[in-house]
Every structure is written in structure tokens, then in C-alpha cells.
Image (cartoon, rainbow, N blue to C red; front, side, top):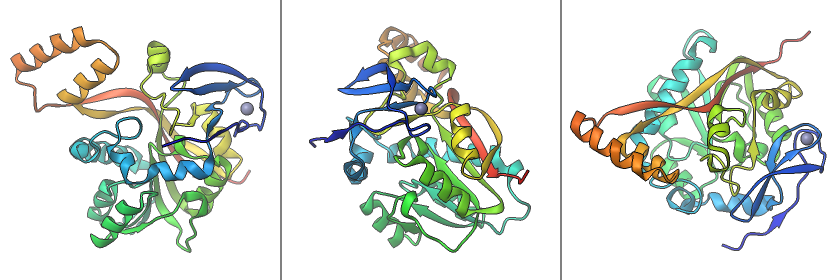
Length: 294
Ligand SMILES: [Zn+2]
């Protein structure tokens, strides 16, 4: 696909003055000189960006996910863990309306439905939407910025989604309007301030400038939340479940194949091939609530 790129100002302060962070695959990741927000500019034009989330996104090797459905077990465990971590901040009772934004293959919706919640998903991949609707799930083929609903949701989830969104203030305002007065918005997103980013530098695996166009820290995320009627109720560093193969793939991504060979031997000796690990990847886990009136 031929990409058409365009310069965009900083989503946080609207400045266009930047300093370079790195260039990857022809895209510049930059840091705003005014407010330090990190983003991609120039990046793929907004109207073209939506089209990359068509069905090939989940099977593509250049961007998006490789073998998304094969990683179902791992993803389900991630979603279960994140929902459990946010549970103390959810309203009492279980008669929830839930909205999973960027629901992909619908694994999180399955978990929500199993809890007895009435769940809905938003997904930009039209084929995925059709399949999920056929399977009886309520999924809308629309971006969060344009979604309309009369329902107020007790739980809204954006797992590895907010870093893809172009109009951040529009999205945060939407979240603020859609969440119930006692509801929660749960987000997981790469953390630009993480130890992992600092350790791996330019090789940080979250630098994916085609689709990861915004790089948050807890502080920058809080600015977007606060000015759109939300506040951070809880945050911590989080990670994801990995199996041996996932770990070995990651090591070879970092060109650490000597470690990969050593680990393969160890895993074989310890008979750990089926074992699942929880690896803290330094991602930012936040629970947002409506901002209390002062
Ligand atoms: Zn800025």
C-alpha cells in the first residue's frame, strides 16, 4: 500500500515545534518541544489510517499483529487479568453495560459476556465485525470518535488502542460522555517513561510508527483525561502473558539469538514448553473515572 503522509501538530498542546526521537521505516517519531508529548509526524493521513485496520491488519507482517488468533490463549489471559486488576474500582453489582473499543476478534467480549455483562464492541475491521455479528456479538463498525449511544457504560475498555487514535481530545470527550457516573474506563498503552523503553532505546518493540502514533506517559495521559472530564483513579505498570515461543520471538526481535538458544535449551531441560509467563513489559495500566466536581 502506498502511504500518504502529512504533518500534524502536537495533540496535547497544538505546537508544531519538535525535536527528533528516532526515524523508523521512514517515519519520524518526535517529541514536542513545548510539552514533551511524543508522537509520529509526519504520519499516515487520517483518512488513510482507518483503511489499514482492514482484515489484513491482523495477519500482516509489516504492521499489526502476526498470528493474532493463534495467540488467543495469551490474549484471553491478559484481558482476564486486566479486568481483575480494575475490579476494585468498578461499581457494585454486575448488571454492567460494557464497551470494548478495538475489540478485534472479540475475545474480551467473550469474557465480559461470561461474567453476565451486556457487552458491545467497536472495531474498524469490517470483516471481523461481520463475523462477530454472525456469532451473536454486538459489534459496531465505527471509530470511537464517531460512535453514538444512549447507553451509559459501567465498564469501557481500550486495551492497546489509545496509542492508535488520531483525535485524542475527541476520543477522551467521547469516553467521558459514554461512561456511567460510577463507571470505569480501563486502558493499557505503551509507556514512554518505562524502564523498558529506556533500556531498549531505539529498539523498543513498541515503536511502530505506522499505527502507534501517540506515545503516552502517565502525566500526558492525565492531561487528556483531566481536560475532558475524567481523572485517573488508579495506575500501575503492567505486562502480558507470554509462552516460550513468544519469548523466543521477542529475543530474536532484539537480535539476542544467543540468549534465545540458551533459553531454548533451558526450557527443554525444565520441560517448560507449555508454561505461561507473565512478563512486565512496562506498559501503562490506568483506570479512569468521571472527574469529581471541585
Ligand atoms: Zn505539545
